[in-house]
Amino acid sequence: MNIRTTPEAGHGTVSGTIGYLTRIEFGEGSIARLPALLAELGVTRPLIATDKGLAATGMICRVTAGLETATVFDGTPPNPTEDAVMAALEMYRAGDCDGIVGIGGGSSLDLAKAVRILTGHRPPLDQYAAVNGGVAKIHGNICPLIAVPTTAGTGSEVGRAAVIITAEGRKLGILSPHNLPNIALCDPELTYGLPPMLTAATGMDAISHCLETYMAPSFNPPAEAIALHGLDCGLRAIEAATADGADISARRDMMVCALEGAMAFQKGLGAVHALTHPLGAIRELNLHHGTLNAVLMPEVLRFNREVIGAKWDVLAGRFGGDPAEKCAELNQRLGMPSGLGAMGVTEAMMEEVSRAAMKDHCHGTNPKIATEAEYLDILRRSA
Image (cartoon, rainbow, N blue to C red; front, side, top):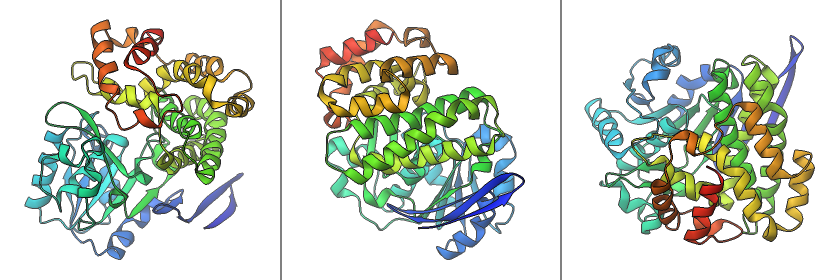
């Protein structure tokens, strides 16, 4: 790792190359390097996978300005679907593309990863889901991918998973080391204009990754250290970033929090994500993943307390008090919804989600393995 710090206008600018799970190019203004990085990977006709909201801001035009040829797919829905993946794949083939650039939040990056899988594998996607034994079916004969996050939340740019609502309506994780982007191009400047509530919701997503990874029971001390550093960055920066979108230090810290949460969650996530995946698959609600994580986190912390031992005290030191209570207070200050009920989640939905959570790939890595009844209790307490 090589990190340079240069004073500029009262702030230090940070840029560098990080080698961990994948290659990360980090720094303010680094998006200007996209054409050179594509050329390095041998990509001359990229598919740009994004969403209509980001395209409407003009950012995609700015990002692609230095590219001679690019095909733009802007149909990524808030919770990416297999239908959207297939539509993007059709554009990839029609444009004779030879690589993909995912630009946006976690939905666009996950869609880009799923399209990439299908450049070398036959559909449908559910056969490659981790819960269906799909990890071993995924090989590396797929196109290059550069992931460009414009939110500081999912960390999908350095993650091995693509979470997709499949054709049968389940929200499933497609996991593989081959699914890691070739390059994560992380430019904090791309997050400066993110609206306050989206900053808060995506930021709580990143914080939830750090928390769940740290609590996960598998042995991985480096991942735990990374998760704690990410948590420190997130807790000190999320309110400042939400209040002032142009706060350079806070935006940078939140992007680091998102990166490190995803670097660390190779160790495993837990009950929060086991529940938010099926909650996010409820088509009539189309709920935001990070917001769901924020709302569920206090009750999952309480659920895990009796089994995580000294880790509870470590978290209390980070939060400055009872982690569950402090997390709930942070949600309130950030303007998160008061509970699942306020988000439209009904009792019948909770019962279905509890059943689905038992089959989620994050279920088995929570420090305390929940029963269906315990999942339902967590949901009811979070209502």
